Length: 315
Image 1 (spheres, rainbow, N blue to C red):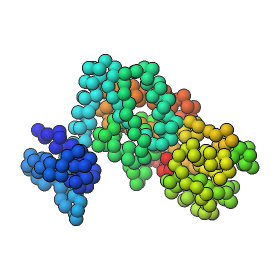
Image 2 (image 1 turned 180 degrees about the horizontal axis):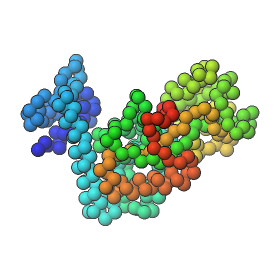
Image 3 (image 1 turned 90 degrees about the horizontal axis):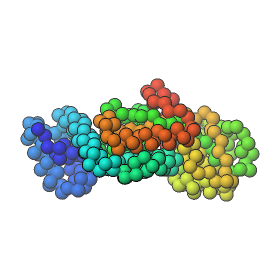
Image 4 (image 1 turned 45 degrees about the horizontal axis):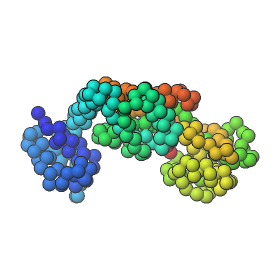
C-alpha cells in the first residue's frame, strides 16, 4: 500500500519538474521531498524519475504511478468532502477556479443562488486562466473549475475529467454609442480596419484574425480590467472586443456591443474529477452554476468535441 502523502509528492514533482519547486508548492523542505521520493521508489521497486539538467522527468513507471495517484487522491478528496458534509450538516467547503469573464458574469450569480440553498457552505474562489485551472483540477488544488474551450492541440483536456456544459457565448465589439457602426446588427473586422483598439494582454487570436482580414490593428491601450476597457471605449480611446458573458455583467451607458461576424462560438463548461460528483457540496455548486447559466439567456450549453470549430483562445 502506497502512502498518499508520497503519491501527492510524486504528482507535484511531475507537475513542477523539480524537487525544489515541489517542496515549495507543498510547504516541505527539499530534503523531505527527496526522502519521500526515495521511499516511494523502494516501495515500487523501480526508479520513478530521471534527471535532465536541473529538471527531473518521470520514468515510464513514474508516469504510470502518477496517473493512478491523481485518481487515488481525487477519490480521497471526494471522501473528505462527503464526510465533511455529513459532519457539518450542510456546511463544508468547495474550492473552485474560473477565468475572468466567468468570475464577472457567471460565478457571482451562482454564489448568490448557493447562499440561498446552502447558507453554511463556504466557497474559495480563484480567478485564473483556463489552462491553469485545468492543472489545478488535475492536482486537486481545486474541486472544480469553470473553463472554456480547452479542446485544441495545445491544451487537450485530460480525458479522465468530467466536463459539464454550462453555456456558450460570442465575441462582440464594444463601440462608443455614437459610432457609425453602433446601429448595425453586427460588424466584421474588415469594416473596422482603420480603428484604434484597446486590447487585452491575451490577443493572439484577435491579431491573427486581423491579419486574415488584411490589416494590422493600431493599439491605443492594453488592459485586462473590464471596467477600464468599457471606460476607455466610452471616452473614444478605441474599440475593444469582449465576450457576451463579460458584457452581461456590466455595460457602460455610453457603450454599445455588437456581435462580431466570423468569430467562433465559445463554449463554457465545468470541469472536475468524476468522483467529486458524489460530493453534496460540489453537486450544490454545479446546480447553482447551471441555474445561473440558464438565467443569463446566452447560447445553449453544448459539449465541446474534437470536431468543433477552432476555439476562441482569447478567453
